[in-house]
Image (tube, rainbow, N blue to C red):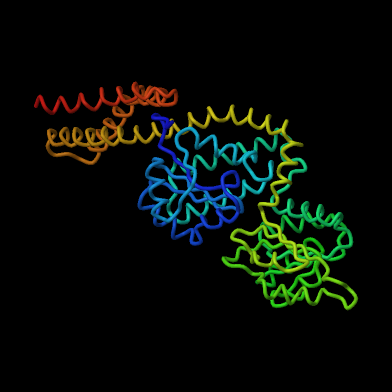
Length: 423
């Protein structure tokens, strides 16, 4: 249920709990900046979080409005939560217990990046900023005070674990990593300790491939030579940010012909692991003999094993979340109260300025020194008179006592209105 004492919050979208990778892909917003610009017209604050296994929209607003907006965007079959369920979800997300791979650290950077994009688009609000910063703070605390990320794997290193499981060992294998972004870095770091014969790194920007390859002792590959190196590899892990597939079915057919030696009855097997969002590899490659395609959906078994081994740490993380949740709600209530108090101070300032001007008018000719003294006096009186009620309204709001906070506001402002009526 919504918390009437806090700013309205709603969150909607799809994630690995509710949808498969194809559904998440279809839900994705390719032009994030355009989406945020349009949403800005409807909500006080908006944040879009898009990762490999989730697309979620956080707004300062109500759930019904968010649901209607997403339906206008052509989105269907998504979950919607509001009120106190939203900050709890954000805490669980940042702590890593809601991730596909439990305890992964990548989500913290993704939340920060989403907030930065929101700020750049001009759709951030004080409440949205508080939500993300608080969630990240708690996520860091969970990792510092528990071992939830000990041996934990990101989606990228989970792909390496899957490859090792499929082949038995990665020692003396040739592996190609396509993409040199954050995910590519995680993949190559996980691979670097596996005793590989060769790690190839391909990226559309060759210079970026060189930088990443140098970090892990691999070899950079020109993108125009991509299929040549696919033919040389045992495993290909693709994780680019391209909006369309970069590995196509017909080209892979040609690759497999090169992997068929004269006396072999069939081509050497090729393992393709696609962890990009949207997908990097056309699904039709599954029909090619000797090709084995795996996607994020196939990493669920890795996640399940991780969850079993970290269940105790996840329980400790939930204890921290329960503790921090109360602080989070109080913070949101205090923020909502501050916005109410801003209205109160605006109201009081208008009265102060009016009465100051009346007093100066009664004095007749005024000098700047007199005007300054009267202005300072009225400001000090206003601040002093409102200090106790400010503390009371803020304390009432933090405790969820909306009625008391609103009663104090009415008692003050309506008294002024009655005064005018008597005149």
